[in-house]
Image (cartoon, rainbow, N blue to C red; front, side, top):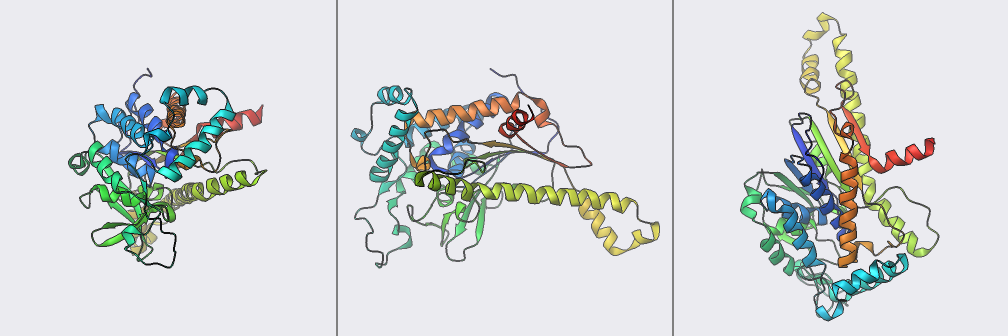
Length: 392
């Protein structure tokens, strides 16, 4: 068991969870590692499967969060029809053989999810909407129903606890009518299961979810990470962010059509994290550069109204440390990896997340407060290892 970690005096310690379907078990492993190390989270933000993990974490007492996360994942990784799944011990035995058997199980579990759906999560809509010209209620215009997810969330989450604001919680979705991005925040509104379901309502598989008279789809349609929402919060605060991504921007050039689909997904859903991080880094550098320039201005210029406005904005600049944890594709992961809800694969994804966060937390320097003259730093244990290998 790792030792409890003592953090610098960050005002906000955030866990930011990206969308990625079945890969979300990796995020649960990361959370378990943060919990066992005693990292004092006070901010959660999620999109899609990240929003569902956020609901489970925020909706339970600290001592029960990992246990309830595990129960949630063990539930949704079961088929709706029990006869469509291998007995767990047989599936695990086959999974442990080699990459070829893991790939076979991935194919099977992805196919099973498409045909049968997932227990407590989604069911095929019957009759299937095979005629695209037929009109229907927006809440019924999809290939699958997700009403079971509402029951699952209400079973595993205490929404009174979510709304007590012990943790600051936000989840992102897209307003179907306006196309605008929206964040549902427990410091602004009372969150219900529907808000979290809306964040994960990815069309055309899942229907739009109605929230207070408006319909919403999965936030990943606009941005698959809520990182920007956390960084742009005001007032600015010294912030440590654990950004957990399920799609890796780095990867080899594909050599067959299945790999093309896989690589497209990785690039499409990971790019916003890179953009947001780089944009915020540049903004922080500019704030600190302007602050140093203001110190050199002559006294007579300091009486100008614009000077006072700049001082008010820039003097409140804070420090930000973003720790990236990124799920890395395994040799047997293909384009269906986000909907292969197999128990054995889920447990391996969970373990990878736990291993990665333990490795990250093993070096306290990664959690250090950034230099005040810079105000921004990022860490990625996998990137650091790659750079070390290249230097050898």
